[in-house]
Image (cartoon, rainbow, N blue to C red):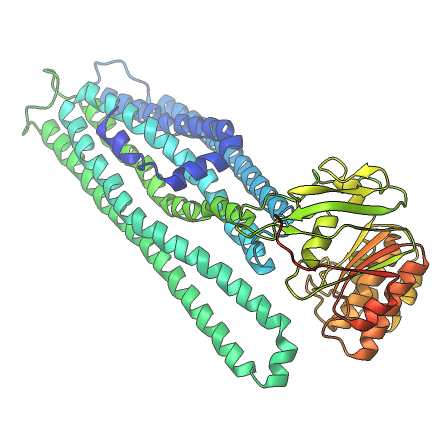
Length: 567
């Protein structure tokens, strides 16, 4: 392998390994696309040979050569063939790139959705930034950089061999000038990668900040802090603009370096060939004088020797961006935080029939590195309400998450009737559970879809049972309103009543509610409690974790979580 091919290959890094792992499913399509693009580029050598042969015949009439008309026809035929191969190669690479982005996004979202309830997880804005903006940066790398790297490994070697066949001196010029480009590209690439990583981080920070400010807009207005919030957003936007401009400046720098050295290399070949044809230089060939046709051929393929390097340099920034995105793999591993994934393979199986829900001997580690907690045994029958009491931090939310299969206990068992909750049954059990977290969450879709989740049934009756009809009526667009995932446009109490309506509509057999009346005024808390009691009256089992004496008094039974460390 020549020096140019060795130098053009970037030094392997952990990010390179991450990129290779991400691109493993599309390695073969990318390899085929790169090989086709290299073949298309080498067609120029055939075109050059045809032109050089024709010119040589015109200069030396005694030699057999195609006529200008024949040469033109052959040249155009090769143009059509080259265009066809390039189009086919581009289409293959683009399909592979789109597949890579789609698969990476699906894997990213699936991992985020299936995180253990104790794991560190991204904010919604950070996840949206990773899935939408950052992951899309993989497409240019797969569609442009990977085929360009394949061409660099093939085309320069073939063209150097063709040049050396006629003149070893011209080949030496290309061998000397060619490696200078990748060397400077590598130096520029170090700065490009660092700038791209900082830009990627800034994009996620700005998105998170923007979503937080929008969610708190009403509070900011009440506090008169709109100006300060706007200034912080403007400052974050300025930082992102500065980092983006630095990335672009580095991209322009790499292009300038490339054009300088490729122009010098072509000029040196042209000067050498010209002096040889003029008879001023008598070395550099294999003992046979360089003919006019050979000189024209060398001059025509010399710029094409640098073209793969030019393409690689043009796509070098795509590689830098993709290297920054490769940190997604490390980021998703960090979300897991050593807590593992929630139970169940995922899916939407039919829910199990109503039955007593019982647990015993549960021992759960609330977080990575934390001591395991012993949770009290308990159970609830259909149509019964069970309260969970205890001080903050004792493990009430941990108990509810464990009962929902969102946390894998170290010991103990949970049963829905005779069915043991495990990885194979978790999805079926969860299909019958209604979940009311302390911070309500919605699907970012029209409210009707966010409440029904695609299930058939009378949504109007469910809203009436949850005393939520007036909430929908006050929203612009009613059931077509978009609340976003955080429930923008409704208060905390209204959001909880809407979630109760969702549980009523789903006909959940078991409802787990975490602090359903926290931070609510007495009237709103009473409305939420009334909605929960409606669920109980319809035959659902209730398990409610709460500090509220009124909520605990409404329960049929109460068990206390003391936060005792397991022995």
